[in-house]
Length: 191
Image (cartoon, rainbow, N blue to C red; front, side):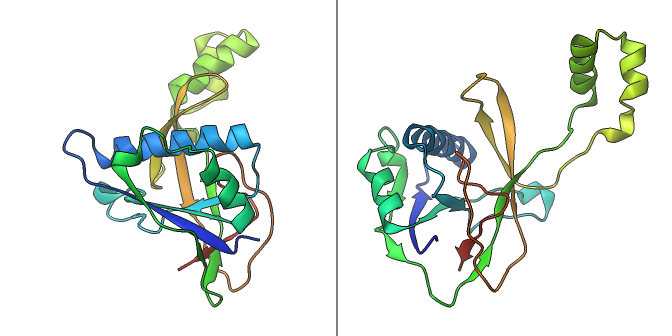
């Protein structure tokens, strides 16, 4: 159960944008969670903004959730090396007992129909016309969720990590978190 938390706030920087710094922070967290093989640390972005689209973003604050033991394992590995000048890290604190909960999860979208067609052509040996018939233009979606630019640790390919903060729930739901601190089932305290 995610009973404790640590807040990490990005400091303003004249050389790097907030978006750039958050991407670097997410990458560092991802590498640390992979190294720890941790599935017991969740993340939320308390300052995320959905509307208007021009202001959409995850904000300047990342909140890590977990048990005291899980969060201690993470902080002991000095995973923030190289970012210390760019962030303020709070002490570990207990989450409010009366906090609501919410699921914070990754959403994936078919965002580029041309890329999908090229991939199908490679995998199935189809012509461009066959792939276009199999994947019509209308499958392409323009997501309205905040995201961070990430890079796959296995393939090295860049991608958009879309983050969805689900509806508020009265009760916590246990479960595992992925190596980005997101979950398809578990909730984190929301306050």
